[in-house]
Image (cartoon, rainbow, N blue to C red; front, side):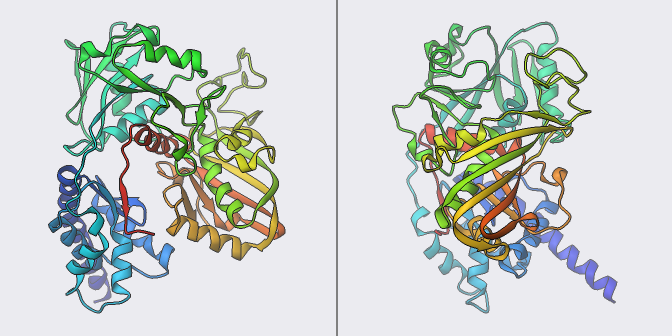
Amino acid sequence: MTADKHLQSWQERFEMAEAMQPLLGKLYRNQGVEVVLYGKPLLNASTIEIIKSHRLVRRHVGEKLRLRESFPFVEALSKLAVKQCKVDIGKLAVNYWREHQDASQIEAYMSQELASAIDHEDTQQARDVVLYGFGRIGRLLARLLIERTGVSNKLCLRAIVLRGGRKGDLEKRASLLRRDSVHGPFNGSVEVDEDNNAIIANGTYIQVIYANSPDEIDYTQYGINNALVVDNTGIWKDEDGLGLHLKSKGAAKVLLTAPAKGAIKNIVYGVNENDILDEDTIVSAASCTTNAITPVLKAVNDKYGIVNGHVETIHSYTNDQNLIDNYHKADRRGRSAPLNMVITETGAAKAVAKALPVLAGKLTGNAIRVPTPNVSMAIISLNLNGETNKEDMNEYLRKVALSSELQNQVDFTESTEIVSSDLVGSRYAGVVDSQATIAEGNRTILYVWYDNEFGYSCQVVGVMQKMLGLQYQSLPNL
């Protein structure tokens, strides 16, 4: 009987998750409502992923959230005229069941909690996006933009720009979008239109443009206007170089997916995105490491105050290193990346000050490249103004991850078994490993995991939305 009971319970959860999927899809595509469960996106999630996301709720609130308890909230949400927002169905359900014994008041409760988004008039116009470069970050950005396809989507991927154009190039680019050795297969279909030099992914028509310089393209001939050009190449990092993009017809703004030089604003989404003004035409999304550490540093500084500290990055090898020993202009990077740990420099610690000026001059940093293809870790050693201990520090950071303005940037794990490969695909800027936290008196050492490709790309999408004025409510309110 015990075995049958477990199987019956699993079957019930599976069927409930299956029933959720069409409702979740319609909410996004028809109303622009993105449903999450304690920050975990449910859009395009598989049945197993939906079940797993419910199991993780215990980590946040210390108690289970069953699918039969959350499903009525998805049903109620689908009946409301809620538009253009992100709704955390997990938080709504947990808060409701703490005060109610039955489901009779769910619709009234939802109407009250989501009132600001009901019959919301959406005046935001869809904007064109061009990916200039199609490497690791470019392809992940494409995946993130394509997964949001629908009538409510405001970030419209219209083109990618490449150098080259030799025979077979288009199919090879499409193949790299279809298959990824780290992040797995593309979730959908990818077709090639050779006649029109285009890739069609899940119905999204992406023009492929070949060019050798940012200023030689007329985007308007492809029907692209007032576009945000996202430069993923890292070739141009100053205002003069990135400004070449703005000389092309149809380009309006430029976002660099690397640290910028000079006076260009380096933005860490969730920390200083409000520094972006309407008149800013060139912005940087900083580096993956800066994005990983700055939200955690902000949280710690807000509560304890940081006197000084050091950040050591244990970083996966990158494309600018050699597979086998060969000449490289940089020190040590010429040695085989898959075979060596390589000490190198990082500007991430100093770059924090561009997003969080209060920490200017307080941090040093270094990096060790290690033989893994993705997911990195920052070890943050800090001297604080206030005193703390491991339990208090972890409890504070758990609350930051759960219910603060940084909840979309900072995640928190209590697992004693987690390793780097478990974080592949994490959508957070950084994940605090609470088991490794060291804190005593006014000193603390924090270990922060981050998917230096996917998590960073999610941060970049946030900056894109802010640059184009595409902001959405997150409900329920904190």
